[in-house]
Structure formats: structure tokens, C-alpha cells
Image (cartoon, rainbow, N blue to C red; front, side, top):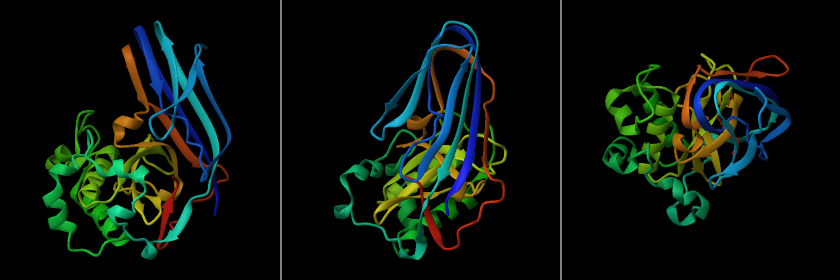
Length: 278
């Protein structure tokens, strides 16, 4: 069943010297997400460049500011029509059967050092039957291991750091899950977006795993239903889909982010189904 979702984000800065900003806050447009309306405005008014970046063509917006306060506001209404598949029917693909475009998501990356977690991954999960249930077990293992603790990690924290510290935020949960899944030979990638019913409201980080013939969503934090996830973009890890990157000197206020069902009501939790919004 399709859902109409309204998302919003406000990013406010004080620019102290000429600064170039790169934002990834606009929702993705793909076969599972239809953008009904959207707007991106800047106060004070100034030129903003729309472009696409990375191998997946994530939507980017770039602007330059010389000084003073700058606020970027994004609003969108989308129709979300996720692919729903019985989870018991989803299998892992052999390496020789994987499409060429997903092979890069088997490799270690900046925040997901899968090569350092090979023994742990195979000791914990190697004897399980491959497929959706093994992936779910990895996700549940990460959920049970970590404590969701805002401020416990920073921009340089990796999956191995999180494993040692056993605490983190959404990006850390996703990074550890991705690293373990890649160590098992499953393509996995980081996805950033908006999430309905997320508390406290913020941008959210999920992971996607390649099963059979598509990418399927998982959230190790369990802070928001996967059925209300609106994707912004995907990449090897959070470095590829940072909601804001700046080159210069500026201070920021905490982002104001929201996502809600446009027609009211509550999200239904899929029973025995896996969801994709790739």
C-alpha cells in the first residue's frame, strides 16, 4: 500500500568567513518514491546549484555564502510505494551471480572495516543458513549489543570503535551492521533519509542489504518503522551521504527535521515481509 509522507528540514548557520556548502537533504526520486511537490529555499536569498554526485547520482545542492546568518529550508511531499517481499523467500546470492554494480559494496570502507571483523562475523553467524533470517540475526545482534547514546561517538568513529565502545547513534548502528554483513560476503550499504515517527526527530541512517535481486532495508536502532523511511541517498558509508558538508568557517544550530504521514493515521508494521525503497 502506498503512503503519502511530508518531510521537512531546516538548517541554520552563522557564516564567519566565505564558505561553500554542499547539502544532501532532498529526497531521492526513484521507482518507489514519487515526489509530488518540493521546495528548497535559502534565507537570505542567494543562488543555489542543483546537481548529482557519486556513482548512485545522489541529489546535491551547493551554495556559497560570504558571512552572516544563512538558513536552508527543504519541504517535500512524496508518495512512497515500497517493494514488499515475503522475507522467507529471500536468499543470499553467490559471488558469481551478483550484478557488477553491487560488487563494490562488498569491500571495506572508511567507516566499515569489514576486513577487520571477518573472524567475529564468521564465528557468530557463519554456521547459520544463508538468507534473510541470517541478515535479521546480524541486525538483531547489533541492536542488542549497542546502547543508543547521543554524544557517545563523533565524525571519526568507525564500526570497530563502536564495537569496542558498545554505544552510538543511528549511523554507528548502521556502520557496524554493514561491516559484519560485508564480512559474511553480502553487499551492504548505508542509506540516509527521513523517518516517520522517529524520536527525537532528526535525519536517520539505515542499512541496505542485497538479497536475491534487490536492496532491502534494515534498521538496527529500531527507533522508527522501516515502512516510513524516505530515502535521501545511499553510499558506502555515512561519508558518502552527509546531510551537510562545508568548506570554510561557519557554526551551525541543531537541524530541525520532521517526517509525518500526510493523511494522518499510523504506519502498519509489515508482518513477515521485507521492504525495499531502492
